[in-house]
Length: 614
Ligand code: M6R
Image 1: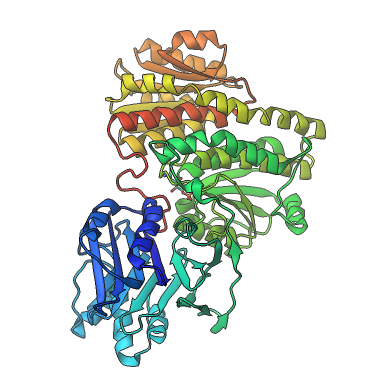
Image 2 (image 1 turned 180 degrees about the vertical axis):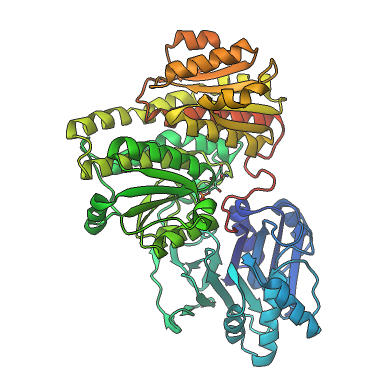
């Protein structure tokens, strides 16, 4: 979490930093700030405020600063409450070095103590200020910023990224990356550095993704990278970003989340057209022959991820077991990585992540690799750390997702994992060619079916109108739609702050049934499936206790429609594909409830888009 940006070049810096922070604000919005070297005064100008970027922007309006080098930050608080004092950038005690930071310095307390003994004064509760002061401490000795950073980071534990400058060298930014992302944008007579490429797209598409332990020296004219790992200056690959900058705008929608939900049919079309060949085979352009060969030999599969991506993993596991007959477990990354998992070279570990930067998922990947497992990343953000560190990657092609609540990235993950299961099944010959053709025929209908569902927006809104003041919601599903129940509940709670609980419908009688009365809405996900009759029985049990039933089922299921207070039909499809459609009404339901409650849909409280702390 936290978004960082740096600029050096001919433009006036503050507007560049602010524009970049607008794109990075999804990473954290507890406070924001910028620091630059004021061209006229020659010293550091620091402007920072508690709250969203809009507060900072208002403050900046009072200043007129001409600067050609600077750094900016948008914060998701870890050490120290959201406040002006804890906002970044932080200046070291000598007043010479300004620094922004994303991540955590684990040994900050002992370092702070030893710096305090040397009479260094601290103004905040953050770990960041310790980083700034440790660098300042070594800078006072060597007078060389690069050497000071190199020395200081050697003493810092944890995972983080820094961007900083010294007022004594107004031409140079220094950037350091350990685990948390940093990408350099290459311009003509100017250069940029940011947590995420979206902040760079208005200026350049030529980027360098820094690697762990890279220390970059960035001036307007050149970028040099020193690797602390190889202890040498290195040449890093320059990539071209193909994302369209307009994809990261709202394009007339009131919220990114709504816009991203409407993009889902296009995302599905893109995935299917890229990955299905002639309706009879699946093609992943990023998996080479050797990797495909290894897929033939695996004995077990694990799906590891967090949040929404975990729900996608649950469906991925069902697809893997059903079509490949390989045992597959699903686990959240934080449990997997600390659980001493039993793995070897016959295990395939699939890491699912939209951002490719989630700290726990990255740690899980490293754990799996260290135990010799084959690792495959299913990632949305191209060039992200998980994508680069795994043995192989499949991109989900959802485009930039800005809303904190994941929507289009989720259906992209579901689709990709189902296709992966079909692909492994063909490699291992556990499904026939004609079976695959039949599955793909149905799959190809999904984008249009999804588009049809988006047209029901008005109905979803009307249903939300009836329930938006309620504080407790129960979501039930079975089999392929148990993950949908979890996902629907997560969507609602994260953006509306209402309590929502997803449960396996078969477990209802083991506890949650006690909640049911005439005030309890229960969202029942019951499309045609092998457990449809069981879901009907569960719904009868809810009705018998006067519960409010909101049902999602296959079009034409009259008995379900009659039993429900509200019914949202989905087009007829295969059970394994149904979660791609059943989640759509749940996304809309959550969205409208949040809007009706006046919540900040795209930036819900306490959350950030990519969780780069453990
Ligand atoms: O970037 P990732 O997919 O690894 O992120 C995982 C979760 O943090 C993420 O899905 C989170 O749960 C979303 N806010 C859910 O909408």
